[in-house]
Image 1 (cartoon, helix red, strand yellow):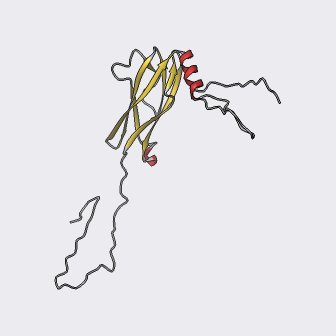
Image 2 (cartoon, one colour):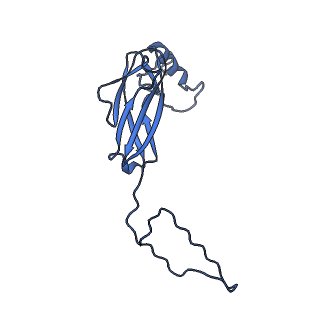
Image 3 (cartoon, one colour):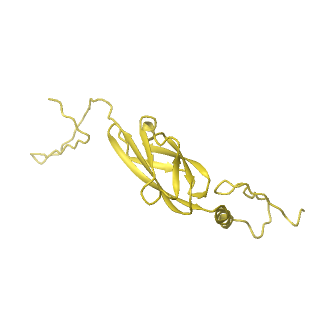
Length: 168
């Protein structure tokens, strides 16, 4: 009868005090089936009230991305802060910020009966607070003696324009 396993360990105990070894070992089997090991969400961590952003779900290993099914939801306590817009059963989901606060977006990924779930924290705030947050993240040099590049887009996608009193 065949033995099915995902692990195999062979222990050898010499009986006469002499050394032992294996000169050849072959394993014949079907390719091992991969299972999803985690679900992930990527997208903006800050949303302005009224803003709608797309979030992307994924699973590990990447080879199972297209085989997995994705189910998005807004956990209890976050319904007044964010709302899913449109389809909640695809790899991507659109989320709209409704009010200021710390919201959670939930993803349940399933592949071949294996389920992995994760939550993603989204800070929803008014647009002025997001702009101030982005400005505080900017790292601008105080003194420069060589060419340098200033960012043209903020962490949250705002376009940045720069102006100098010294055009030289």
